Image (cartoon, rainbow, N blue to C red; front, side, top):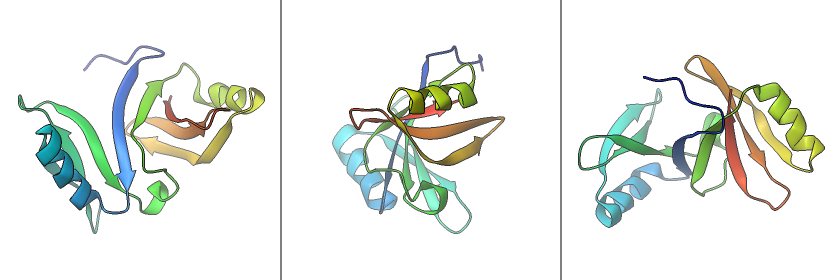
Length: 122
């Protein structure tokens, strides 16, 4: 897999109280297939296109995801996560929660001055 480019949107997901029901909703409305991903005690879901490609996720609002709003959030690659977090605050945005580990990297949820959310990945 190629390394994501800086500024590239690399993922979209949705975090909601009942990911099971919402993933079924999108299966019926959009036509995505559902693949369960064990989170140790419950499942979150990868949503797959007709060709089998994973296109997004639907997650339960639990644990470290408890403070994520119920809206589709895009994940964007940045050059330096700590620097981007500092710039977010300096430019009037907010850091929501703590940095989290994702595979080899880290990510965090931000809110821009207009109130929109985005996940930064470093």
